[in-house]
Length: 298
Figure 1 (cartoon, one colour):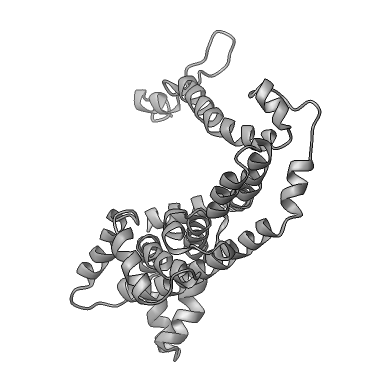
Figure 2 (cartoon, helix red, strand yellow; figure 1 turned 180 degrees about the vertical axis):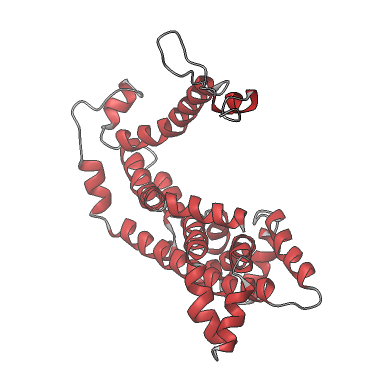
């Protein structure tokens, strides 16, 4: 009984401070309202141009000339119908889809194999190899565009999607390896030892254990590679000169030059070209965050 009423015990079981009305005091982190306000303002500034382009496609050129920031009155869908019924837009969508899917497949397959070797094998120079891949993040494609153009030209890949896909895979590999190596390294060695005891070879262990456990990271790098390829502009600008091979970013430029006086139709074409990437990113946003979080923890 004495132990229960000791000062130390009373300090432990002492109730939390209570306000005048009998409610516990809850302190908000300092600056939280300001952080929320700044976040909302930033989101608004980022979404405003996107909404302006989408809504502008429902206006006529006369409405845009009279009131550039006005609301459609009435709403006109002819601009979107004109773009959707044309073959030019769908050909560019097909080209972008082929380039993005091929880049994603190549980056994921090659990056997963390289990451597996770096993460699970012990050999001399492993750290140097990882550093070489990591250093690739410091060299954007704008730095290497001139020698890359010469290499693609000498290989005879000009005006072809292969000339765009192969460099995009190479530039996607550093990010892929940086994300996947922590995932593969976090797999306990006990699992690998138990698999080997049960007669599982290295290749079988890779397919049966490593690949399923690294699915979050694989999805993350796949989404990032797909979006980067879909939005790529500089590389296709240098490699593709034939309009039949244009991807959507180049198609937007060509369309805006061809219909420079038809602002409403250009806005409609632009909004339709960016909607697939926005929808794709919105659907897999949680996958991306989850994969990056797992990579940081690993």
